[in-house]
Length: 245
Ligand code: PGA
Image (cartoon, rainbow, N blue to C red; front, side, top):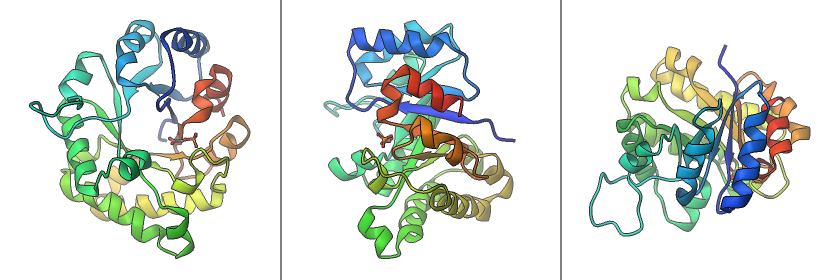
């Protein structure tokens, strides 16, 4: 049995005061799933100090593919590691579309995170136009393929995969549990073609308008091991309800 994992993606939201209230609320109640929050870089120290003695893990939303150097504005994996980060999102669709991140860049970021003991949460997903054109499997297969190619089997065994259809992110439109399960099964099959054992152990999260009222059904699907939660991760009650779904 794979343990359920629910990761909050705060995106560019938060303040010191709001985060304190949110984190105190989240850590006060034990959840059935393992919980983590991915915060903006300036708040990682705050997450570390408030969550260190809790069961809630914390992570970042991006990492540089480079180790160090003249890359103004970038943040290195070694720096994230110094703040006790367990997870880092790589290849979120907002990074791919607004910052031009390619499949190769995403794979390089995943490798860099692993080098510093941070679990990369590799995000893949198709746009509405791609889905309507019947290209969903081709798109997510290509996105995952770059990572399958770049990582050793041992490294692959350490990542988390997140399927986030772009059309479901922040739109209130969720993929139906059957739609999500079908893509998850496809993705697990792609990993299994490389190694069945790694595929069987890999946590695969669904993301895109997950809410307390649809989480249980999504998480009951055989290949959906939890969620990557945007909007609903900003309210402790909603996030906890999803963590218990
Ligand atoms: P959402 O975002 O839950 O607000 O749709 C999910 C994500 O982008 O990770």
